[in-house]
Image (cartoon, rainbow, N blue to C red; front, side, top):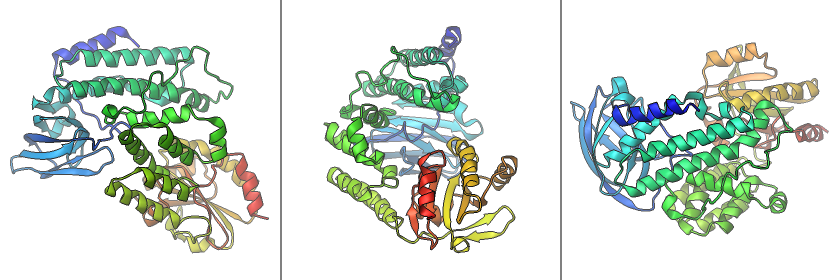
Length: 469
């Protein structure tokens, strides 16, 4: 990376009021319930988009509702677990950190939302730092995205990763932040970000470049060198919990993993056995289970392990709900029905497909992994042409215009359907938390596999052949 550019950016950070607070994704924002703090938050919103502000955690769960006066002013006091959150205006949101004894005043103008944010008061240094850091990181553009850096040759990738890591440390060190706990979390967050990149690179490089022969060089860094998986003081640090999960898989016992035969079950077993601190273990297990409970093939055993670790009633209820919903989509159960629009505008229901084996692809035009499966899906459909099997693709969380364009431009095969919005009850019943997702139904509409193999999996052809016998 250009050192002069970085220094200029950091100088700007010191001397000008460049402000941007980015929405940090789920994997970097996990608010902790370790300890509640009392926060005083006041300020004024110019040109507000609504008469309220919402404070949400990294899961999108609401913690506090703020009512604005007619002129956009507000003042509130509330107790909340110390950590990272998002303040949500109707159309935009911004990241904030709440620590002990924080008494913050916030001003912003929604007409220039990111650039206008200003904090003052106790805790302002930490939050103004987050804003300035986000602006600098935004200026890095594609450099921070895996779709760019995972295409680089190894030496170039390592050089870029070190440059961004050192730049992030320099940004943090250039600030005077009284809250030493926050600073510790941020330092760990910088390390976690580097770990993520190093861990992601090898497999993603092979995927994006189609260089299946690539193997990391002997001097490729250990992504998790000196990483502590049992430190409760780091629970709220960006990416800490997700880094624990990656660490456990990276250092997996290959024989034990193969014996388990289920990634999700192996991971929760590893967390139960290897994380020494109970608070860290609970956070990691719950974080992982929100999606894993909807994906594991060994749902009963998985759920029993979860219940033996978690003690929080609210979290237990959430996973129990997902568990019971997943039980309804186990092998042999009747599939939840669907009714979606085809390319010609005709409504297709599940009942219309009775009598044949059904292979369903849940996808979207913006989903990279979905698009990478298309050539394999085409090959799969050609291999079973004329057989008693129907191939369906259901596009969801997309626009009808993009969907129809993709169907035409990519000459998509099979029955193409469009699910408006989030897909409705069918997606909810199947607990769809990520795409692509594949489902196999028998000739009577009963579930054979609610999380089936992808078209790129060479084992799928033999499985379908066996089902068609």
